[in-house]
Image (cartoon, rainbow, N blue to C red; front, top):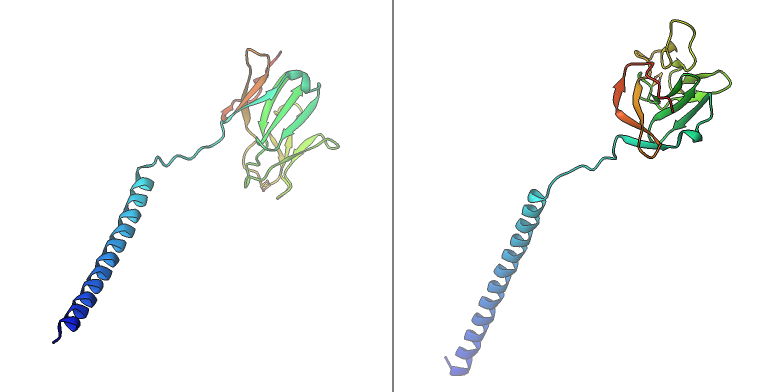
Length: 168
Ligand code: FES
């Protein structure tokens, strides 16, 4: 074999070796990057950020006497009655639909399966009690209080016994 041919074969062999070496290094790099990404995801805190259950519904002056105000985003009613302020959940206790205030009837009604609830009940009943429909429970009263700035706050996560009015 001539020297020139021998050099060519060695060159081919060398470049093939380099190719496989680079291929191997590339594969290792991809695997390392995948492992690093997986480790980062594993170590990163997996926290679900939910909005606070406490809602500042503003100054009591916003709510005229005998008014029922739905905060649809927060799923609560703010009610100003002669006895004081209170908050009812606006989420139907049947299957969780958002209820609505029906001023023409003076009641809260669920659009899904027709449950109806009192706001100004007759004697022996309480606001939130069911009038009719498949809802198994009254609309719960939510904890309400006044902060140092004079705003009304509602904690949507805390149900309270009925008839606890806030007077300002
Ligand atoms: S969800 Fe309200 S009556 Fe069914």
